[in-house]
Amino acid sequence: MKRTFLILILVMFVMSTQSLHAMPRLWRKVCGEVISLDKENQTLTVKSSKDPAPLTMKLNESTIYIQNHERAFSKNLAEGNKVTVFYKNPLLSSKFATRIVWETSRRTIQPSLECP
Image (cartoon, rainbow, N blue to C red):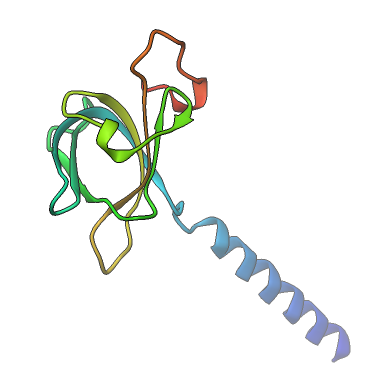
């Protein structure tokens, strides 16, 4: 009886940890060109080469802007820039950008941020 109970607890533990691996990532990444940047409504629209429809997401005060591997201001971001946007996609609200990375110099892009 005691052994059966321990096996049951062990099976429950193993089953619960496997469900954690099935959960989606907390953030997603999209690479593309900035189509529109609305600073009044705090929205950003990015056109990716992989997706035919442009992706619109919210910007907020916690969005981090990185230009040429250094922190930057939001006013430095302009339409037409090639960007890598890390964003979250909550179930009950709209997508919001957590980090926007772009290059304006001829320095090489870090491999982890490179767009295919």
